Image (cartoon, rainbow, N blue to C red):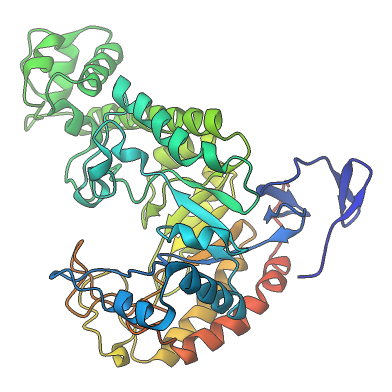
Length: 438
């Protein structure tokens, strides 16, 4: 990429405009009516990454790791493997190590990201990476969550505070804010718990909303409580058949906003205290992003991350997110999988295409359209290596997401097209229509 900035004294200039900037770390900045990431050398940067660059790959249900066996035979050790993968990535035009990648990849001269899994704080680190998968949600009102977030930040962020290669931190992945996995709204979920800090926060919110008038609550929910504190000993609050659905939705929305604000505030404060130099990149919303949560996310994160597996970028939804936050967006999971790979492709997001040529066409179409939106500043492909044919141990996914197969052989049709498209990425981004008001 040609250098767009010229340093003059203590300021930086871009196309005739002067900016006073923090130097030395990645940041997000609106320049000439388009959002960019700006790198530590003060050059505009579009983050083109791949998720899950791991020497071990994914174990199948029996614990077999074909990719690990192949890479150990080929490279011998993790350092040699990481150096080879970084060389490949640069050749293919990628500049960022995406989420869930081996730490060996963090010192290869590429930007990198770190997943914090704040959702598991206060629940035990062993379960942290899988809470999202089952729709569980942390008790963000509990002291344990706050202390756990501080501990995670001290362990994972503080040692990296001076690293210029760190792009930023993902707080979590695909949390169930609105019940899409869990089946219940967050308010109902917290009310169904034991006498927890979160349940007390939910009861206090209802008490405030109904001005301490339990009869008003009874009318809205079509229930028969004698006092609010009954809820603390109950197994939940089940609306009756005559409940006022609009009132219920307003109650649920109010609690969702309170929980989201608390989550993002606690997480951001913990990260900022440990590492004031790097961005937080949101929570990788899963396809749908509730407007209330999006608004709260935008108050505390420099970039909004969004996962999507559609045929084309969801332009209308992305615009809604941008308008709600006025923050740039990274698409942090997206992919195409092909039936000519020989993999089942029966579990995992995205509808399969037929061939690797179709995957390559999909890559070109998706990147071109996404970077034509002036607030999209990066795309991270899912995944580096294919999933096992028998399904990965975590959840059974068995798809051709990889840029390499289980034997570490690249899909040449795909990676050659990636190289071509990635080489044009900055030009595509610069040609995006200008954002009004910036």
